[in-house]
Amino acid sequence: MENDHIDPRVRNEVFDTASLSAFFGGYCERLSQSLALIDREALARAVQAVEGTGARGGHIYAIGNGGSAAIADHLCCDWTKGTDAQGHKPIASHSLSSNAALYSAIANDFGFAEVFSQQLDYFGKKGDLLLAISSSGNSDNIVGAAAKAKSLGMTSIGLTGFSGGRLKDVADIAVHVPADNYGVVEDAHQIIMHIIAQFITARRLKR
Image (tube, rainbow, N blue to C red; front, side, top):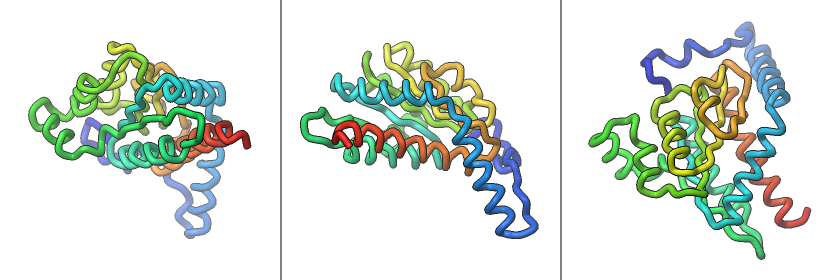
């Protein structure tokens, strides 16, 4: 979601429309190229942050707008239930987009820019982890939440695309997808989410 009310579709790199096959090929090629360029060290630090938060009994709060909100909801299933293993503390993850009543009350009373940072004021504490997802990296409610997390002593991971925007600079750990297409970026973020979940699970199950 953008804050300047420009239709985000105009920002998308457009692939060859001569045929569906050509478009499909261009899209898949860009996704593959973008995944190959992700900083593996940053991704490793993100895994360490997730594992460390779980081991300490801390909480992970995931945030996003639109498609990124759906990814935030999805990862709470995979990072909590999907990593469950005997002898390990559960990774407690929560999507701050999922409680419609609280979300809309904050938006109504404090403004949409505060829907996540206000919830962090309610729930977040030192040692917790914020997972902030924004393709543009410039959504005010996402960037503001990352700043709030820092003030609370929380670590933040930012999943971004395009140029990375402000979130890339504010987040403690920036996992950037270098692509200029919302679908490609969101697909890559979903893949990153699954990789983190499955990697942690494999380590916990000693596979």
